[in-house]
Image 1 (cartoon, helix red, strand yellow):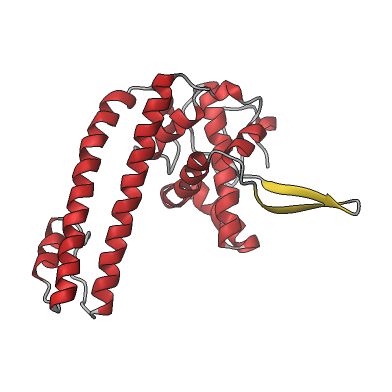
Image 2: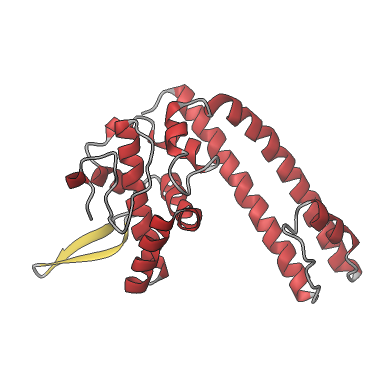
Length: 239
């Protein structure tokens, strides 16, 4: 059981995740509202940025839909204000942590996921090897036997759901920012489809997280097509 101070920090980060997810849901509802009213989107980089907000405030809609849009925007502004205040507390308190700085060197794990992963793990030495860490993250399939045969089912449910969520979500920005992770994901996608590729990449990402924290060395992008992770002995990370 982590110390009380660590648990309180984890609750802050989990609350931030809740606010981020709430913000995303509100934005999705606004997109749906515009789509059902056949409103063409402006050519802006971010619909919810300065220019996008100006557009949303001038959209002409039926009275009922206009009320919904106004309330969605007010709710979004409230959530973003809470998120901004909370982010400042978290940034001041957590971003000096050595573990957070190490995790930020891994593709896909930025300011949002690094502190969450660091605190949910607490001390990486709690895990004897990365396979046990995989199980804790819920990134391994369930296993059952029948008639002398062993079957693999869905991912295990008894796990740290926050780590599982963070590692799977980190796959997508990671594959966009890293050629190595992009190639790995596309290879798995070609072999077994999108869902399996995301889990396989998250599992490999979890292994990198484990070794980065155990060795206290920054992540270095592998060269070529090898699956070898440079800071660690080659025999430890193949697969």
